[in-house]
Length: 144
Image (cartoon, rainbow, N blue to C red):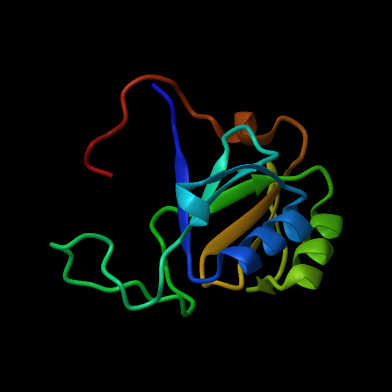
């Protein structure tokens, strides 16, 4: 199985520029007659897809695309080596920092949004990262 990560954006050129400047991604392929761009630089490619505001994601959807700041149950967590430098670079490229940097035993985390309202987190591992908070392996408790 292959995972494809697609992100709808209202301005494709601006999105490409943001993800290049903020995260150091590079353009892989231009797709769909120029309405999609493959961005490389992470373990999984990020596909930016031009989708105008107020359009429906599918004909049956009862909602329209809205690029004001919004909550996405799926968001991008970017693991970075130097959180402070990554944050500075992203903000300079147009991201909005949404709170203080939080420090945990496993690492540091800051939340942001891109210029199109999508949530981002920058994570800097400390020590063993998430291995420090692993309690067990196996089945997940379905009641949680």
